[in-house]
Length: 236
Image (cartoon, rainbow, N blue to C red; front, side, top):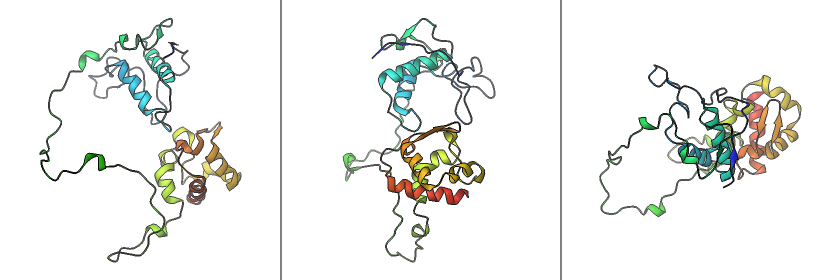
């Protein structure tokens, strides 16, 4: 792992919109509305590294290298005034940076399992799979009089619900909110072909940044070509 100097601070971890505050809040944990940040609440610097490595960036988790994760860890710790300007944070001294609230965390020895142990006819754990997929927009036949509501959907709605809503429902990263004609007017004016191309290849503008395919690499061109008209129709 490469060594990293704490980067110069441009923002101060104050949080934007619905994103959490990263710095400050010292001495607030006993308040009615405490400010829980890395500096005021978190117990370990290694936990911060692990969280960034596993969960960030928002649209493409686990895409950062160990070096990039170390640099971001140094940045957040520096925001909380816990890293000196001339101190280099690396794999050798990462855990030596002690967070102020570490002593408030104690080991919990209580069991976290209360279910009765399965002793017979148990399902093979290797056969249990958790999957996520877009529902088909076609449903053959009806069972027990069930109305086929899926086939009545716009073909792009399942794609939107599965992939696009995470940003376009609340405006994460400047994403135009579906259902707001004012913020979509400029994009719609560019035409469907440009909009699909921007969604496939990504775009950066004064309004915000969109990663290629919204950060979902497996999302196909065909699925994007279905989702864009649906979002336009809901926002016109």
